[in-house]
Image 1 (tube, rainbow, N blue to C red):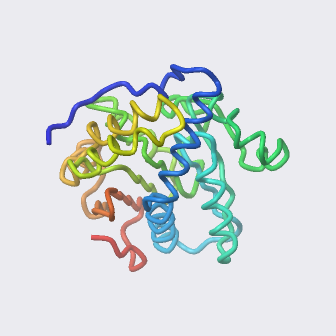
Image 2: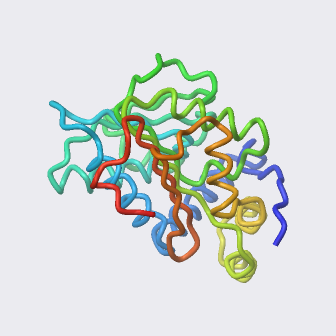
Length: 246
């Protein structure tokens, strides 16, 4: 299956506010039901386990955070297991933060997630501002030099670890997304979900992309995660025993 880059409708909010909110709800449903949340949490836990021991809460930036719902859920899950995490959200579109999720949890709770609207390559933060930087289902939106710049920008903001979760390009999930189209709430999702798998990377491609971005091979792990994800962990001070993926 050849990679086919495309511009997804949600990238530029090419729909009404109601359609955008519905598409973000569709993504939340897919993330919960098809292993994305589980895989993302696992990668973050492994990265945290491989970080040097420190004091205080772990500062964690999620780039391309969408509505912020994924970071909120995982942050609370980590906190409930005894890991002190201080989340920050960044997304290029503030309108994604203005989805039904913000209205439902209320302004006060939303503020605790520290949202910032900015492009990751022009982030208003100094290098190494966060212990941990991550993104979920973001990398496949970028190709060529833009993908390399994204990875470099993410790594530059991380003091200890970078985590990237994304889709794995393959025919079965691509076809499955087509079959699910009648059940999606938003026409944006009906276009974007199959397109996402068509422009996703293979494991080898993601690994080669990370190396081309300047990541050191001995500090890098890229793995396949069921049912249709890829996971990348880059430990800036070297891999430790807490990193089990291979």
